[in-house]
Length: 386
Image (cartoon, rainbow, N blue to C red; front, side):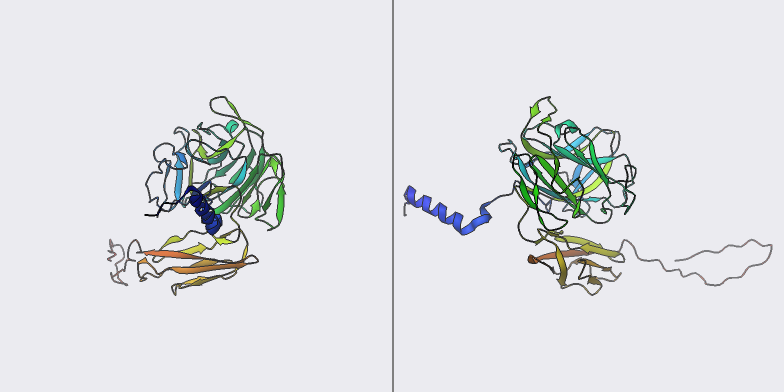
């Protein structure tokens, strides 16, 4: 057995860092919920430090995403994640946050019930109060409207921190597909550069400010930032100046029903374009199917897909795979579909595993007689047979 001297161990450590480069960096928070099966409760562990009351945070239908749901009148609750660890060992004064959000299909529209995203202090306190947030975004179960957006029909509202004033009313098209939310925040005294999802230009985010985009559209006042509060008041009444957690919160009087996926938080957005749409999806025989290829870190101008079944097609400009699955389609997981997206920054690749499920029931066939006769003034009956 060979014994390495301390200097040799040090040399190996430097070699390891050089060889792996950025691969040794771990994101502050990266959760795709791939292991969360349908109906299973979200568990505390890792960065997840609170999961709310029973039934609030569970696996979405089909698994691989988080369902956040609550009825009005039940006690307020929240799911929270630390941006370092369960001990809140590292404050995060500036950074990048992204997640995807979709309204659960079939949900009842409500102009008053909503779920709130909040950025909170580097401690174990709850985020039940807006006074504890550096800023917040409220998501409503409301249909998308393309014009005339106001408080009564908005499905996204953004707010300044510490229970501050509303910034604006917005409407995002997340009724049938998820919309990507991207946030940059900077609670330091120096500007922070980021790449605008709307223009792909480099923008200097002002000191002590934040900016939010939804589906590549700006949903705060200016690309250079809205003012971030210097401190917040925690649920224990303490004034906090260090950032360290995020939360999805619903108050006692509120109701909501959303699907959340791909939560990612780090010092900056991932560099280079990458396909970030879900790697698994489900389609049902006899019904239409639609799947958008989405990207992060760049804007794609063309798309391709290999190994698509004959009943599906790809719009190479929009990146949407669509079609109607025939009743007789083979069920089960299909062979992996290879995806690519090309833009100014290069080409990104990915894959989609599509599972086909059977139609819920066969279409009935009527076998009773097509023509019958009857007599005037006499009672008439006819039995439809299938």
